[in-house]
Amino acid sequence: MSIFSNFLKLFKYQPTTDAQNTFNIQTALNDNWDKVDIFAKDVSQQLEDKADLIDGKVPSAQLPIMDYAPALHTHTKANIIDFPVSMPANGGNADTVNNKTVESNVPDNAKFTDTVYIHPSTHPASIITGLPTSLPASDVYSWAKQPNKPSYNYSEVGAAPNSHSHSYAPLVQSGTTVPTSFVGEGVLYGVHN
Image (cartoon, rainbow, N blue to C red):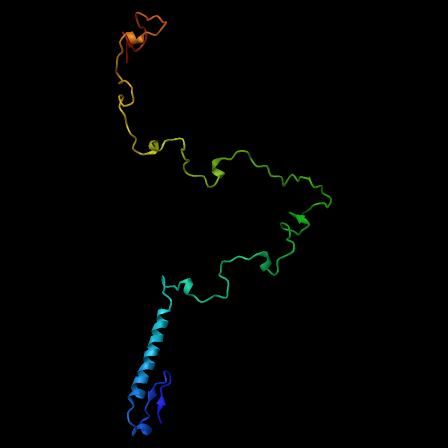
């Protein structure tokens, strides 16, 4: 009588009882090889389906569905089963503040001098957080913000050179008397320096 392997159930001849039987190629070889081939294909597919590790970790998309909350998570008030109906005041209970009792008949518009905060109208820059290190110059042309500025000579901008002279005639203005001599620092005979 024949026997089978434990795991893949491959056919095996039993030497004591099957020794006189004709060797059956289909049963003893081909059927067994088909079972081995199917098993090898399944194992290969399972290996392909295994996680691709990234930095030694399994990507979250390949993890099984988790039935617990991550370490960092939030809850709504409805999710907190023992949320108190009221909270005690600072260092006391709901009837005291800083261990002082407030009378029960306090008018709605009452102001308590130790609780009124007056916000200052100005602040030093040292107490303001989030200020930029530099402010934008929106009124400055972009070319003026470049590290290398263009340079121009006097003729490109319609000016005269630093040292130049004028003839006497252009100094006459309509309805004015032209002086015959010039007095003043830096003016000598119609030439200014």
